[in-house]
Image: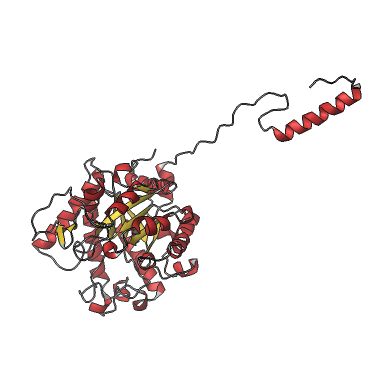
Length: 414
């Protein structure tokens, strides 16, 4: 609009000052000279060296691939979570009451078979295994077969780019009986610690673990990294290493000795060490009651089936998982939901309406989630035609969930 009246020189100066002030408050991309400054380039994320990564691990001498696995698991957790299945290529179900397994006494099964792949077209990202029949107190042809099968399936998973984790349902080393306390009520922890009557028995079992670990050589000639998760669910009473059967200090010493003997005496350098109680905590203090210390742990987790049962509110499991992830971030550890699932999937939308909601609760950095193994009587992923099949496929398609066909390279730092 043109003005027909005359402005004084002073008025023009005042108006110019007011306009300049207004523009400086409302325009963020105009400099003092009235020109647009160059765009700000965000700082690039510097990739750490392998030496830096190893410096934060329980094993400072870890293999390059093991250190890279730690780094990439931490990286994945910023945007999603890897999906895992126990015994993924070892056993499964074809239909209600019909199962398959890679076991000596059964018909041969292809090592490529996996229930998750049958339903979704993709392998899981994480493969769960167990030292149950590898480092225990029985031997013979059947156990030789079990050991060799586990070795082959672990290497297969690595060759596909997958991640391997091993639990250890370790038979009572004092009684040579079952790992369940109810079936072999013999106190063992104090006896297998250094100076105890059965420490040498325990050392021999760890030597079997070490020999197996060193036999895991991938197609690239590298040792296969393994997330080793010994003495899990220790806050319960069902295992001989459980809370009622040893003191907190004895449990810590057991875990510490396991790590140091494998690492320092037996030269195992392809393990990341995972520590995971069950769900029996509601604060960080309770969670850490039997924590063996930062120097012995790379991954902290939680096994939780009960809080994710059918119809339960996701907030409770999410709250507990948040305790885990908050601690992991403070200590530069990985975090995982190390075991979960709904037995026989009695809630058809469990994967999207329970598990996914827990994993996405407050956007927590969780590296992976693992559901348990499938058998005809107890299965945790659906078979074709099961009411939960479509929900499982929908779960797989969620951008936050990572299966084997979507994985980044896990064994190089880039």
